[in-house]
Structures are given as structure tokens and as C-alpha cells.
View 1: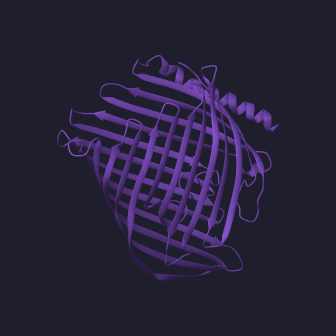
View 2: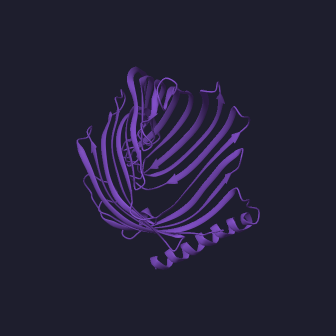
View 3: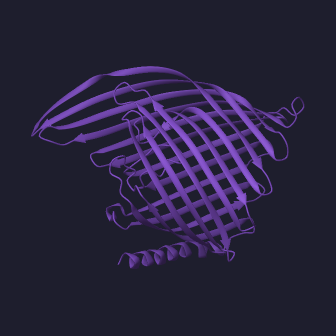
Length: 419
């Protein structure tokens, strides 16, 4: 029965993609591309809940339908990526879900000196641990996240470019007996200057950034006395950092930026205890804290004929959706892509994240995450792609003194439709 449901969903997804695309095909121009696709992924994991004490294995089938639109002309560079997927769990079918995401970008060259840009993204996600390879955090429950941004750039001189950007985002996380809402407002001012007259193939970099992060959470502990905890966490983060990027040779490039950060945080707590129709509310005084820290962004890239290699390290303060607060995040990553033939490549992605946040009204965040992911990608019959991955992830929660491990392997076949 589950196989029949999977086949039916694939048919529905394919019909949906084609019904969206065929009208667009008639108005597509040479400067644009329309790529609808469908894929099937089969995976096995030995810890589907990413638990430290209740490991359960499962097979998961994911059917995906999507559409990629792109437009590249003299003045406009735009793209849109939209996809919808359904997850089928063999044993834990209570986790079956339909997730979807869409991202878009638009860049416009207004004049020879000025550029304008806009971005938008929305994602609905239900998978536990889906962000461990990008943030190092284990998130559970149903999550909805949206981000919007505007930017403008201007050539201040023949050698100097200035860019101003602003963004707004919100995220919602819903779990059993708890939920969390987050809002972010960000602004960034950056400058790049060609320093090649003094330092060969070198560009100077300077950045000023501001982040306002607000999080509200609610946790219910049912019982003879039902206790509901309300916590709010607000941070204003200021960061300044400067450095350079340099093309060492035609194959090697390096970048380095360093600076400092200042974080001003306010935490509030309200406890509501209910017995029948009687409620007692306790409001604690707000807790304020100020923290100084460092900022580091550095990396080395190699772009060869058969190998692409990237090594990076970073340390800064970011929003941490799902943790009711920000995170002082340190990260190191290594990415290798080996081109065996024109259609076959091997990959190795490794990363290590340390997320920390010392808090006054709740437990501290102190989590170390490591990922190792070898894989391959094979293109055949022009429009088909077969990819496979093995991923090992370990998450050490130093606050609770627990460790979660997961082994995951999957095969995915994808079909692009040429229009």
C-alpha cells in the first residue's frame, strides 16, 4: 500500500511540475532557462530521531518534484528554485510529512555604477537533524522559516565598491508541549577595494554588520499542577571585521577577515502554574548581559582541472533558531570534489561546529557537532543523475553530558526535463 502511495505521489508531483512549466515554455526567451525535475531518494538511518538514548533505525523514501527558473540578460540576473517533497517512513509512519521550499534572487544593473538586488526564501521542514551539516544544531518538530532581503551596491571609484543590505526573517518551531517564534532584523555595510597596485591580485575587505534577534518560547509541563514557562530572549549584535582576499596563483586563492563583536542581551521569564480554574503567575526580573567576542572568517580554495578543494574556518555570533537564543559559533570545514570523468565525480565533505551561549534564565547552549560525508555523483542519459552519500554525524551536548550518533546512507536518482 505504501508503494502504491509513493507511485501516486510521483505522478501527482510530475503533473504539477509540468502543468506549471508548459505555459512558461511558450514565453521563455533565449536568456532564460526552465528546468523542471523529479527525484526519488531511498535512505537508511540507524538513528531516525537523532536520540542519545533511544536509537531507532528506519528506511525513508522521499519523492520530490521541483522547478528551476533562471534569467540572465544584460541588466537582469534572476533565478527561482521551488520544490515540494513527501517523506515516507517504513516504521515510524507518524513522521510522514510533506515539506517544501522556495528560494529566489533578483539582481538588476541600474547604471554602470549602481546595482540593486532582492532575495526571498521560505522553507517548511519536518526532519530532525536536517541542519546539522550547515549549523551543527539538532532541530526537531515542524519548522517554518522565511527570509527576505534587499541590497544596493555602488562603485565609489574605479577601485572601490560599497554595498548596503538589509534583511528580515522569522521562524516558527512547533513540538509536543512546546513552541518557539523567532524574528531577525539585519543590516550590513561592506566595502571592497582593489589593492593590486600595491599587493598583486589582492582585494581589501571591510564589513560592518548589525543583527537584532528576538525569540519567544513556550513550554508546557502537564500534571496535577500544569506549569507553563514563557521565555523571551532578545539580542543586539554588532560586528566589525576587515581583511583581504588574494589570488595566489591561477589555481589557489585565500581570504582572511578578523574583527570583534559586541552583544547586548535581555532575557525574561514568566511562569504560570494552573490547578483547575486557579492560576498563579510568577514574573522574574529581566536579566541583562553584555558580551565582547571575536570574529574570524578565513579559507583557502583550490580550483583545478580534476580537483576542487575548499578549507574554511569561522567564528562569529549568529541567530540559532530552535535554541531560544543566539549562538557564538565556531566552524571548520573541508570540501573536496574529484572529477573522475566528465559525468562522474567523487566528493568528501567534513565539518565541525561548536555552538555556545551562556544564558541567565535557562540552561546554557554548549554543543559540538562533527560530520563526515563521502559521496558520488553520476550523470547519464543526459538528463538523469544518480547520487549517493554516506554521512556520519556525532553531536555532543556538553551541557547535558550526552552524545548522539547517526549513520545514514542514501541513493537518489533525479530526472531533469529539457524544455
